Image 1 (tube, rainbow, N blue to C red):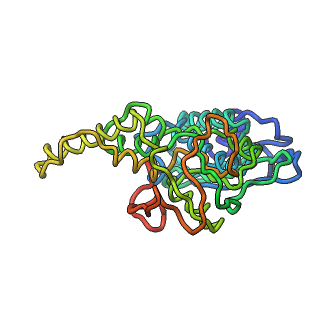
Image 2: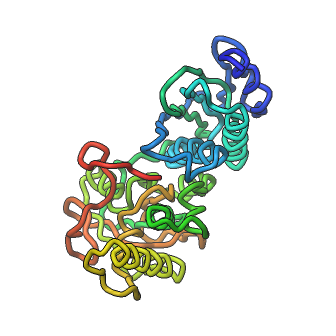
Image 3: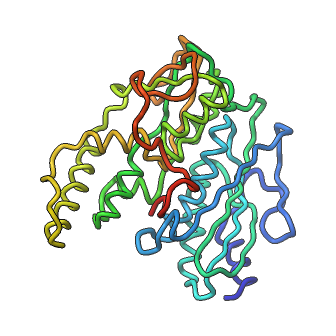
Length: 335
C-alpha cells in the first residue's frame, strides 16, 4: 500500500468528529475550541512493552492506545475532543491489521465523543503509536493533582485490578475471560471526569501505573497524606478466581518442569489485593472531594486525606512496590 496509500486509507477508515473543522489530509488539523483553552496530553504504546501482537488483536491495540490518552483528558475534568496518532510500523504489516487498528481507535474515540483528527506514519522494526489527546474544559477550571486538602474524601470511579489480573492470566498461558479482556481493552469512565469537576473535585488523576503510585502523585503535589481503607477495596469474586487460576497454573508449571512445586492453589486474597492497590492499567479515575460531598453511586469512597506526606494503607506504609515505574523496573510493563 505504501505510506501515502496508508494515509489515504486511514482518512477513509477514521470518521471525523464534531470538533474537527479540518481533518486528515492537510499539513495540520483545525479543531474548534469553544472554551478558548485546549487540554493536551501525549502517550506511547510500544509493541513488546505495552502489548504483544500474539496476545492482542489490532482493534484491541487501537482501543488501548486511544484509552490511555483519552483517560488523561478526563482526569483533568475535560471532555475529550480529538486524538493525533503517529504510527510507526514494519513495512510488511498487513493492511488488514492497520484497518482493524483504525477501527479500534475509532470505536474507543466514539465512546468518549472524540475522533482521530490526524497524525503521522513512519517505518520501524516494531509497532509504535504515539497518541496526543486533546480536550475541552467547557468553562470549568481544570482539576489538578495539587488541590487535595486534609479532610477531603478519596474516591474512585471505574475498575481496579482487573487489567493487572488479565496480564497475570495471559502470562500464565490463560487467554480467556473478562479479566483478560479488561487488560487487552480497558474502558475508562470518561464522563466521570467532567462529572467530578462539576461536583467540586479538589484533585484528580488517571490510575494508569497503580492506585497507590498514582495517589502518591496527588499526595506529593498537594503536600498531604492519603490514607487508603483496604476494607473498601476488597477484591470481588472475579479477582479472587483469577488469583486462584494464576496460582494453579504456576503450580502446574513447577510440577511439569521438575522444579519444587509451589503450594497448591487456593484462595489468594493477598495477590488479588495487590492487583487492586498496585496493578494499574485499568484507567479508573481517582479524585478527592471536600468533606460531605454527595457522590453518585459510581464513585466509591476508598479513603481520606490527612495532614502529613505520602500514601498509607490502613494507616501503615505499603511494604510492596506501589505500581509501575518505567525507569526503576525491568521487563515489560504489560502484555
